[in-house]
Length: 298
Image 1 (cartoon, rainbow, N blue to C red):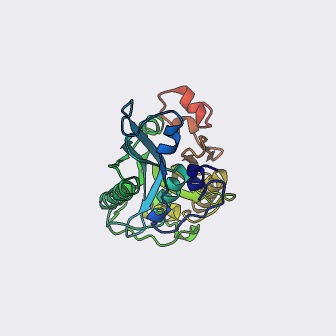
Image 2: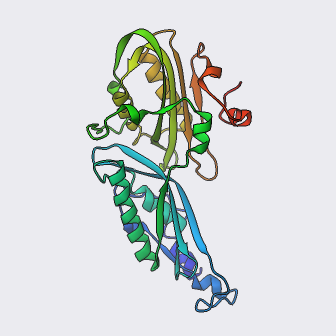
Image 3: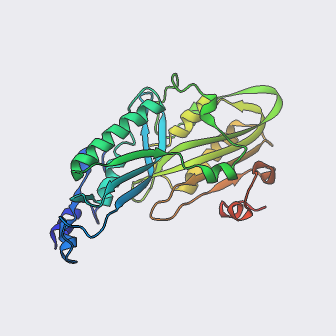
């Protein structure tokens, strides 16, 4: 076994629960030199220039009040660095942020995380690492054009979240005199694989038409309560649908779709809707092929 393989084997091929709190000791640096020697590449006189660019689609953290914040994380460092980061260690390190709390609001939380990750990786790799958080939402905006971010209806600074096992008792609703439609989107769903116990992330799109109005702050708290649950993607979608179905009136329209991010190159995007739901009217689509991709028939 090469020295590189010995270093990498710290996590590879092993069931690793990771850390429930921020832990930079999980990072593993792999020296580039060993592999380059095989190809007669001199680290002191590289025959090329370039960058290593990584996209972490599953970065998630919480504010001090327990509000989940999920972003696409992009990191970049120069190919002339002495080390590269071992991929599973990076995933475990980033996952250690999942249940950690930083900052009073989303902006402050992300600023703190950016500083921590930049410093940790730069020190570990002995090079300058650039970090950025992206909101890569072009496709979902096109497909779900009528849906609004649920946080537009919630005061983030006063929202208190402290339950992270599925808690339907958090849901609350009031009654209106006239039935109305609601198109809501929550971008920070997090549950865990039942087999590997690794976290899964997704966006939830909820549409319902009813005399009842589910209070948005209660719905955010409920969706956050999946954060420490262990279920398959399809099960989470069905659980959310059933809890909302139970709180609404018989005959109300209801649609729930969970678009999970890639894991191992595969994403799972279950959707469930009531028999009387006018699914064709829920979506305003740009591309019929995208429509089919998300499991909805025109």
